[in-house]
View 1: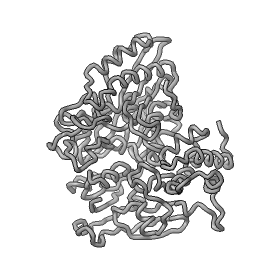
View 2: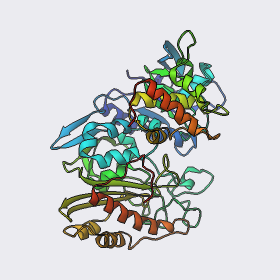
View 3: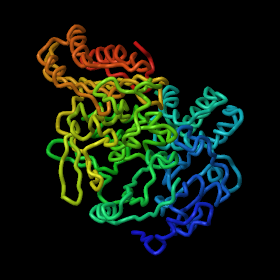
View 4: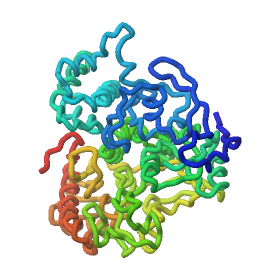
Length: 181
Length: 338
């Protein structure tokens, strides 16, 4: 739907530090809950989730699309939320690490596999790793450990937990019935 | 990030008018490069015109024996499309060797064409840069230039074009459909990106108020004898130091048709028609490949930090042509260095 910000166009010149007047109304379905909100056009999806929705599971690492800590699923596809302007995602479904477990608290199979394989050390990259791995599984292009490594290269782990991350994803893949090749 | 206004027109013509109407207005689609540049203050648009949801531009369609790729087809959708994988595997491989899965899910075909250089000085607003601020100088020429160009440079700019997709498109002789206030036109990929000369601020020949609507692939896809060889500082999720798209049509042991394009070495995907002509009709031997490589690199110039690229490119061309001739492209997940 076309958006006309002409009515609030003057706000572009408002001094930094003031509450931004130029807001756009958008609708997002976040972890299954439909929410309407007002966003400034320069708000990234990452900042919206963390600062306004209080969903701090999604992490800000580099804030430049280089580390993958901010990975979420947008309409089922993994993306870097730090490089997505929230206003451009009007109408989308967003799934964050907080939305993966079942309502009764049962972990998502990928989360359970990460716990079982001790696939982390400090844990900072973990929400991004898990969301990325869920996206990877859904895409269905990885069949071997080698391909998992290649298709998880957008998620850096400074602790170097990579071998256990790959093992966890392999297990989740087997559970999901993906045949190795 | 600077403050800017935002609008989301419902049609291409409206979007073009919106950008034409306001100085400093820019198109945004996937945003993976533009938002990053805005965070560094390298780009400071006054308005973003969101074309990311325009109808009809996210399809891949049959056209004149080839394929027409809509500008909003994401890099992932392009690379995994069965028609692309079967008929243009070189393009699929090149796209999958770039960025990360997350970025490829967001980045579009049109945006990939228009992504900007990753030159350190271009990104650093604390330093001069002729591309960012014309006339201020180029610190890369005598500075840190490991990732910079060795072909087609000028004293004003030695930046490279960072795309992998465009290198394959150059080898495939694709063309770009654009539209603007003056109507539609078609630009050969070879003429879409430009050399820096004395106007390094201009990456392409696209007008400021024109928009890319599609990329056209001609029928010939070289599905049997091709490779995309990408050499970089780490084995995935890094820009090319040197990449080579090689596509051959074989007649027994001889080369009937040859396409060769290099990435990471110039301000545009680098093709050399003379080197391709030299290969045509020749037996596919290492000697022929070495002659072609020497021809491509005869005017190459190193700037210190990037001088290694000349020898790297020579070897990469020979290896890529050998793989293409043998019909043994190297899978992206295979990190073995022969």
